[in-house]
Amino acid sequence: MQEIVSNINSWVWSPALIYLALGAGLFFSVLTRFVQLRMFREMIHLLFSSKESEKGISSFQALAVSLSGRVGTGNIAGVAAAIGFGGPGAVFWMWVVAFLGASTAYVEAALGQIYKEVDEGQYRGGPAFYIEKAMGQRWYAWIFAVSTIFACGVLLPTVQANAISTSVEIALGTNGTIDTFLGSISTTKLAAAVFVVTVFGFIIFGGVKRIAHVTQVVVPFMAMGYILAAVVIILMNIGELPRIIGMIIGDAFTPMAGVGAAIGWGVKRGVYSNEAGQGTGPHAASAAEVQHPAQQGLVQAFSVYVDTLFVCSATAFMILITGAYNVQGGDSGFIIQNLPAATDPNSAAFTQMAVESVLPGVGKPFVAVALFFFAFTTVLAYYYIAETNIAYLRRFFRVPGEMVILKLVMMGAVFYGAVRTAELAWGLGDIGVGLMAWLNIIAILILFFMGKPALKALADYERQKKEGVAQYTFDPEALGIRNADFWNNRKSS
Image (cartoon, rainbow, N blue to C red; front, side, top):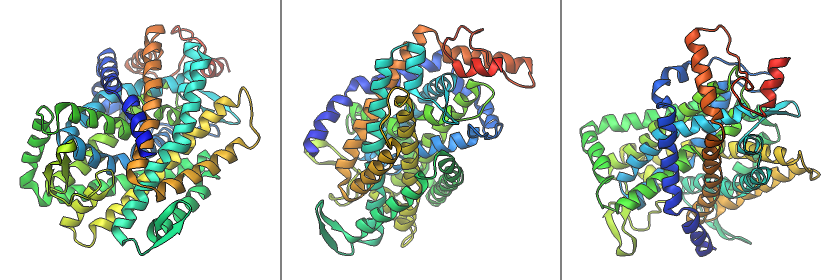
């Protein structure tokens, strides 16, 4: 199974996708005149400027749901893997893909808002919706929807669940093993799997409102607590900080693990972590109640900063400043070996050992708890994304009890991922991310050449902001944007 997954990954994550993600980010940064810098203050202002309604959630709730998808295992175990396989320089490329990806996040989220719909009393939208409406290619939209249901409903949850169970096992030990039909499983992992599946089921059967209310409380709490711990560790080793920053920048352009490995792993884990261009963010963005589509696009651009520049950087600095990492050099062994060879870079082990070295007896459990919240809320976001794409497909045909089936399948995927190996789980997750990224990035590039709807919305919003309007409005027909039915109906009502 591992060999099959690795072969598929080598095709999905070819250098073409890595440079497509970087190129799209640079392309949209230039076209938006680096909106991620110009309108940073506006992003902060917009976070708290909208309120939830009967049909939609607030901008902050949408940010929280989106961040719950972005801030996950990739921020702890993903950063460790980037360093372990690409060297410290991979962190630099994670920063690059975050900075450039913020513009991509604006574009895809604004598109999600422009082409959203009202479905059974709540807002729905995402790449499948804007691919059909803006491109007029229903077959392409169907491929994206099916791929996303498979990726978010089956493949990606395995990574998050595995990270939770593995980190708990590192913190508490195996406590014996139990033989099951899935093989020999540690008692700790099995108990963690059962707990996560039970809590997950309780929340997802409560619907999108319950997901939004849970994430708006948990996400800020977990992110701030984790960053605070990183700041403490950095301050305790402040003399090392200049050297670490210099090493990150220097190794980004030197062949420590190969320049290609640093770029490849940095972009790969960067896209996995911040999800810019992947097509997941627009689903939560579409559910927000806003006056103008560009507003939520800007809020989603800010979420990329929170994910990578804050949370991922916190992990990277903790690992590098304490020396709790290895760098693998392929078949030739280790380029750098500070930890036992058996330490798995695909897990949270680097991070747990880093915090443990500074806070003995506290570090491993603390990271396990943080990872639980990070990964668990990410699985909640995956459910919402898969649910939205099923809602898209059921406009054309319905399967009796489709949402219940999705819930049960995802609960099964969470359990399976929790008890399997980290390498297999990450391989499955990478396939899911790669498929969605290929389909979505190509779509938003095509849409630019077909009519620039996201850029027109940005220009319209900036014009109204300059005029100092009391309330923003959005008239898609006046901007030459077709098939934005929701906004046309709102304008005429």
